[in-house]
Length: 320
Length: 121
Image 1 (cartoon, rainbow over the protein chains, first blue to last red):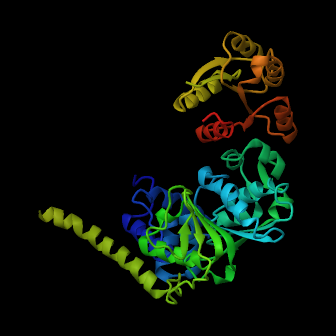
Image 2 (image 1 turned 90 degrees about the vertical axis):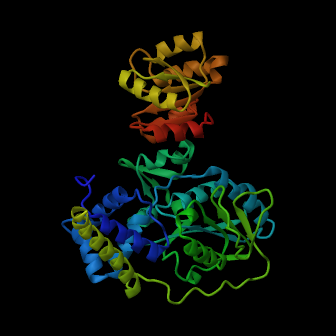
Image 3 (image 1 turned 180 degrees about the vertical axis):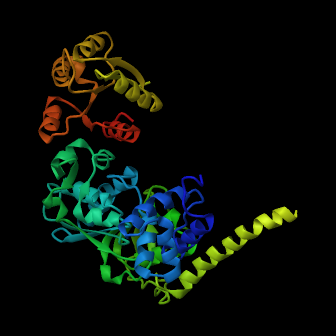
């Protein structure tokens, strides 16, 4: 393992701590290889000779832009088109039919929260495009948000590899909604124009995004620490309009706190916002931001503590 | 157990695809060109066919057209698996009666995803 990986265990612990502090996400114990591969690519892009050099620079200077890049790279998810179909299908089987009578000729705003490289918002756009005959006067605005990252940049361009378009995407949708460009496939302009992307810190104040009739936050919640789960769900609660919907992944729940939502009877993973406008509790104004001294101090303490432990261990063993 | 006939002139591709399909709980058999596949379908019609395009003797498109003319041949789910990536070729395959389409190179995730799309898993 040490022949392949260039960072010492203390750096992995420090990076895991930084990710937890900044994004509320717990990286697993088996993430060393993932950290190495994701960040090696970032180090090259950022102009460092080695990954170690970039990480040393990060913890030495506490550079906020680099911290965001590092954490965003670590959070990139391998997403597929039409992922988790049992949950995804509920958007047009359950939610849209319930919203349509209320918004007959209006616009339904849909948010894909944590959209990574954009497969979810584009899958939504394709699914809803197929309902045009059923709901001819209904308009849709689809917004994808995530941390600034190379994945989000790919989403904005709407360009996908040969492998990407063969995971979860029916062949008929590929030839209907994509153009072939050399070895890649790009979303056709008509569909692309229905989706916009925004960069945001997912645990920050989300008010600038506006409010939505439907928010999809699927298959991410279990990766968050318990306090971060509360924070992110509280933030999402503030984004969903009264009587709007929150769609989680299959089998995911709100963990005993309702956040102003009620579950839909017999429908796993769908939650409806209560009619009265419930003000979400204000977000902690001292939210940890990348250049926050506390964040780096905590991660650095982790780094130092483990280094001290690692350095001390051999002599203790010898003594014994 | 769902049966799948793997049709490809490359023995290596047949072997790799069969192994992936066996892991997905399919019972597999193999044919090395369209004519061989026609002969095997006449003896025992499979539930699914994974079909290459460019093969000697009879290519995949001619095989598919002939298969779909047979009343029994309308039933198998046909998934093309070919190096042809042109939109016109894909359209041609779908018009001839293909249910799904895999562009080589493929991996187990792609086969699983496409067989799910085709309702086989």
